[in-house]
Length: 307
Image (cartoon, rainbow, N blue to C red; front, side):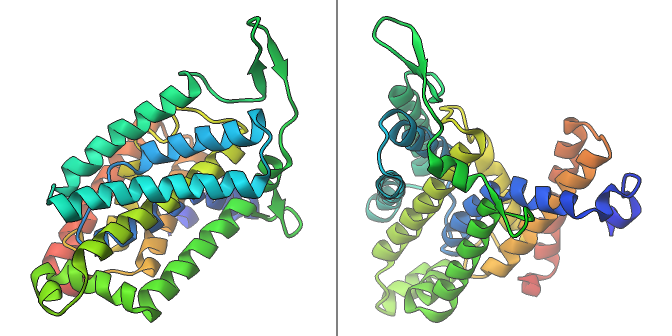
C-alpha cells in the first residue's frame, strides 16, 4: 500500500524494482530463516553476521585463491557454519550459559577468525605474490553462477535459494517431530524435558542449523560481491532479528512459523526499496525500521494470539 502511494513516478510498478528488492533482501532472508529456528526454541543468536563474514572469506579463499571444486568449497563452508553454530548451542544447552552471552562470544570469535584467515584484507581476484606484487585471476564460475539471474533475467539465483530455504524449513517445522520438539521447548522447556524430549540435543541442533544457514548466506554474499570481506555481515544480526519479530514470531519462543518470517522478509525488503526509490536517506530508513519493530512487539503484547 505504501508503494502504491509513494511509487516514485511509477518506478514501483516496474518488475525490475521488485526483482531487485528480492535479490537485495535474500541474504538477510536466509539469515532470518536460521534465526527463526533459534527464536522458536526460545533463544537468540547474535553471531549470525560474524559467521556470514567468516564463511564469505572462507568460500572466496577456497574458490578464488585455492581453486577448489565448487561442491567441496560449499560443503566445507556449510560444515564450518554447522560446527560453529553447534558450539554456541552446546555452550547454551550443556553449560547453561545465557544465549545472549554465548552467541556474543561467538560473534567476537567469528569476526576474529574472519580477520585471521583473511589477514585483515578482502579476498578477491587480486592474489598477492611472495614478492608483494599482485596477480589477477579469473572469477570462478560458481561465483558467476550464484550471482546470475534466470527465467529471462527475471529471478536471481539467490532468491531461488531463499525460496528453497523457506520451503525446507516449512517442511521441517510442520512435518517432523524435531520441528514439534522446538515448539515444545520454546513453549515450556521444563515440561518438554519431563515429556522425554532431548532438550539439550534439540537446542544444540537449532543453533547448528542456524549456523549452516549463516554459511549459505555467506556464500551468497561472496557471490554477490565477488569477494570475501572480513567485515561483511556487521549488524546483519539485528536485521535478521527484526525480520523475525516484524513477521510476528514471538521472542518468548514456542510460537511462530517460517511463513511469518517470509512476511517479515517482504516487509523489510519493500520498506527499504520504497524508501530507496524515493531517495530517502539511510538515517530515516533506520528510524522507520526501529519504529516498525516497536509497533510489531506492542501488537504481540496486546494480542498474544497474534502469532
